[in-house]
Length: 369
Image 1: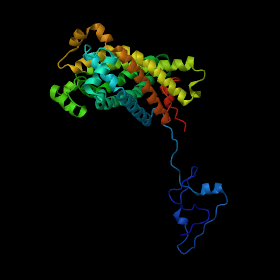
Image 2: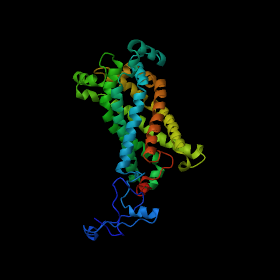
Image 3: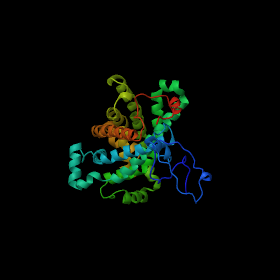
Image 4: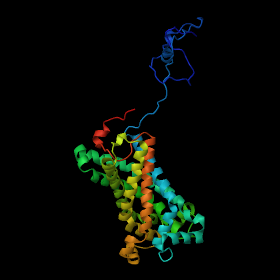
């Protein structure tokens, strides 16, 4: 088969051009079978580029802000952020839970680690890591994904002017709404995790602990700690997001000599970690009483909030295990924001905080390629 000299030549499908002009091939203008092949040799490299018309795959395509792909990226970033960090600090969480449940035995952080090592060995430090990984991955997906959704939703309802004026309230409302959903996903895993960590011999992990828990307390027992969990996590998350956004904005405004868009990506991620760590300290203090309640209720069968307050006392409710939790939550929150924003940078999205455009205005501006 031959082609007129002004038509494209056929090439293998694995050859592509990065610049192309789409022109359809008209089969009606091909020559007959008896005609010999007739190809005009390209006169220049640029003509070769024009001759090969097969389009190249899209390269470096940016994710449009507030698109389904944007929310999917934020959701996956939340999975990495919360799942990995909470699993990494399982030993600290294990000591904290036991200090809350049995302070006579676990008197301090150092002695708590010593008791665990003596009684359970090195493996005991990671008891309950599977429900921790799965539970906090599910929570992180909902927490970060729905926060981005509700932040824009409430921002659009308020309008650009009110968003700038009341943005902290919008951060608080968006994070609280997201955490209500996130804790429903977390609660069953948290119930099994606490039981496995604080009652050695109850179960090895999630696979045998989950059916034992359901058999003992019923399916609804998995959600016995939901209200205290909301009491712990909603204030925690409101503080986590609102204080982070505010702290990062203040850092860019007063501590960094150049605008955010002129800072390098490593600098921006360092600011995300620093802002997250400071926010985590506030989070630990605000949510600690409810954290003590959750640990107590999930460990003791048929226990009530009144029983917990009576046994722990108000002072114990606010202070038992607090220093360890400040260290744990500060590091945890800083690492979470670092991982979350690192993933956003990896997929081509801006880091969180700093210069915050009004959502309604930002939504109508497509991302630049």
